Image (cartoon, rainbow, N blue to C red; front, side, top):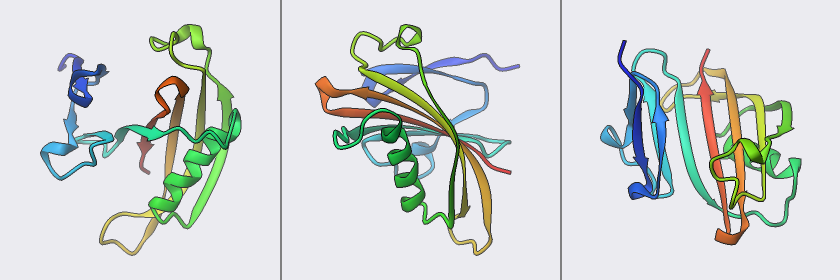
Length: 146
């Protein structure tokens, strides 16, 4: 089995430990500068790490819901369904010193892949870390296709 590896993100600003089989999507297609995107060569799962502008108009649980619905809008999801939201304990985070609040969300979205007509339900797991001193919302999205 291939070992996990640390992968530098955003030019080495920080890093993430990735599982075996993770592919950097930027090696396959253009990826926006505010995103790091990885996929698995066999399972079609993906992980997206995004640095987003802080959405100060939403607080608490509503912030992670806002980002989940925004992703659904960008993906032109036909259905956006939140299943669970809960706070993440800051003491468990490596970024706890600069993270004001953190949330995890699970839900489903019905989306069609690029150039496909049939929409399928995809399970999404999101973690939102709010970094107001940097005017940043750090959003991690894990996509689990059917």
